[in-house]
Structures are given as C-alpha cells and as structure tokens.
Length: 177
Image 1: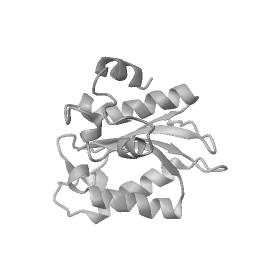
Image 2 (image 1 turned 135 degrees about the horizontal axis):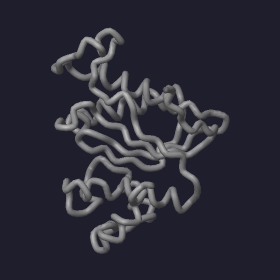
Image 3 (image 1 turned 30 degrees about the vertical axis):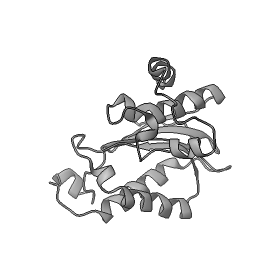
Image 4 (image 1 turned 180 degrees about the vertical axis):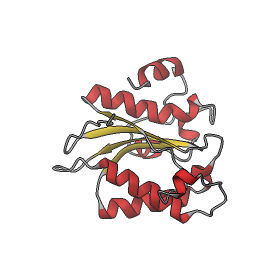
C-alpha cells in the first residue's frame, strides 16, 4: 500500500514529528543543532514557520509553504538528516536502518494535516503552544523555552498568561482533529 499525503502547493500544514526512542530528551538536549538544521534547510528550501514547540522527544509545528511548492516531505527528510548527522553517535543502529544509511533517530513517518481555514489554524496553533503544559513540562505555556509562544507574546497576539487560567477550554479547543 502506498501512503498518500495531501500535497497542496502553497498550503499550510500542521506536523507532528517524533523520535524513534520516545524516552529520550534528544531534541531539547541538542536544541541548537535542531535550530541550525531548520535554518540550513529553510535557506535552501524556504517555508514559513507559523508556530512550533519542541518537546524532549517530539515536535509540533505549522508551516506555510511557498506558492507553487508543496514538497514538505523533502524538507523533513533534509531537516532530519542534517540533525542526525550533527549529533554524536551513541545509539544502536538496526541493520534495516544501516542498509538505508539511516541512524534510526527519527520515526520514519510523521503526522501531517492540511490546515483548512482560519479556525483550524487557530486550533492547531493553540494546541502547539499548550502542548508543554499538557505534557506536564511547565505550568504555563510561556514558561516553555522551546516554543513560538514567545514570538506571539512579543507581538501581543497572546498574553503571557494565555493557557494558564482556562486550561480545560484551551486543551479542548486546541486538540487537532
């Protein structure tokens, strides 16, 4: 069976990308390496990061693709590869990964969702920003250092206490469909 993705040129997408080992904190331990991988690939293959939160072992992000371009799969492959090549080798590499010249750091697949409208976008951005609270990493979304919520607060799109009061409402409205 062939996996089919929604490829809409210039589309806006929500992604969840996870490490193969969900018990590590590799992404936050090597956050500068991850940021460098994103900068490098965005320079060669532009896209806008609308929102993003990096957890210890997974990340959520919304990307706006450029007009005439829908190749987010290439960008993810390059980001994952750049990150993997830049961190020290300490993990066991399965023969199936080795034969494909992969380290097996990332899950091969990822979740992607084509954003349908402004309401869908807002729901997914809220989900991203609230995710560190949902996972018990912080009490307030703004306390998580690896999140685009800081840009949203700086631009006055969200207040610093967003997500701290009506957490049940935010959690229910932010869950991606």
